[in-house]
Length: 217
Image 1 (cartoon, rainbow, N blue to C red):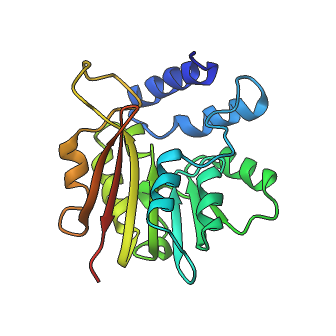
Image 2 (cartoon, rainbow, N blue to C red):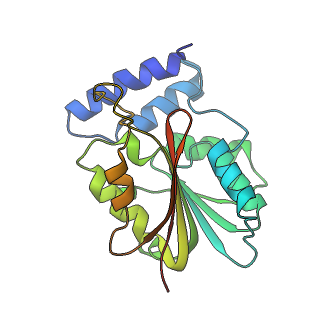
């Protein structure tokens, strides 16, 4: 069943992309949801299932390590990563989302920040042992997706890793006008090329990708 915020997201994203402002719609969508005009977008308490399955499979232990969650929204994935022992930073371009997550989680150990992936604060670059990117790159057309991907890769510290989850383009349907824009195998295999090594690229139901990359160091 289509959620009302999905329909509103399509409207706002189409307008913003048409204006050449492909990231401008996120804050307005969250603001409308928080105001009660629509249901709150991406409102969940449980972590992304692909992230949780991966973390369990590798016995993820963040003790003494730093992590960042890109496009964190209302914080479910960030809270999960923090529960695995990481000193966790999480950011979103939408001030409304960050204001709401801070209101909902006043005692959280997560450092929630407003950040633009296309203009990151210097202290974030190359600083994290684990970078989590879920459904953010696929929300952007290209451009600016390539620049956003480079920024995600740039968050990974030497010796660190990136975990990415995205809707998978399996070639069964015509390319959508999006967002989301399902990502193909070539994009996922080349993500981080020259900086990161691809560790695994799994086809998941949905259809989705689960990808893990490592930065030598």
